[in-house]
Amino acid sequence: MFTLDELKQASGTLPVTVRMIVKSDDVKTVAGSHYKNRISKVSTIIARINFSYAMVVDATRLVDGKPATFEPKPRKWGSRVGAMVEHKGAWYLETMPLESVSTRYFIDRTEEVSFDSIKEHIYVAPSKAQEEHQGLDKEQLIIVRDYKWSNVVSIVSA
Image 1 (cartoon, rainbow, N blue to C red):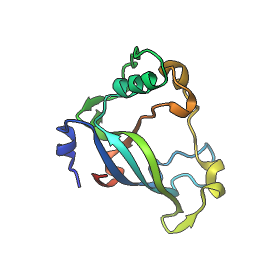
Image 2 (tube, rainbow, N blue to C red):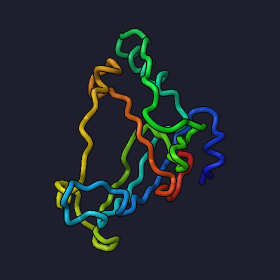
Image 3 (cartoon, one colour):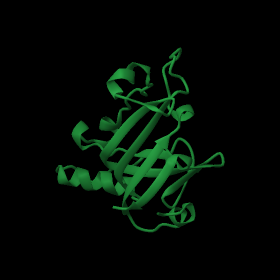
Image 4 (cartoon, one colour):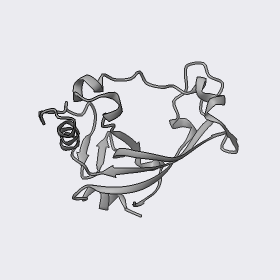
């Protein structure tokens, strides 16, 4: 497993498998939900870390026959350090998810439930205008996700 210090000093793009347990107080629920602070999420993803967002978008644009002229907007929060992002004293793993291997939801950490049974209680942020910004079709979008380091259970080379 990679340590925080190793990830802060990472060089070069790395394919990894990340397993996370998002604790109940970190799962965002809709206002007034009786599941507030009761839902936990256990997930495993395959992702790239320590990548150049601009280079990945431009490479995808070139494959699509478009010019490699993408200029990313500055981060809205945090400072990148290797494969990590530091924000207000907390660390986040910056990833480009490639595949969701598994996702499981629990109520009160013990009762496993289907996503369909709780989806109306989970807050989903409005979609952003990435298609227009990246100049790519929705199916080709390069997605970047930051995961709170304290929620990462394991991260190993894929």
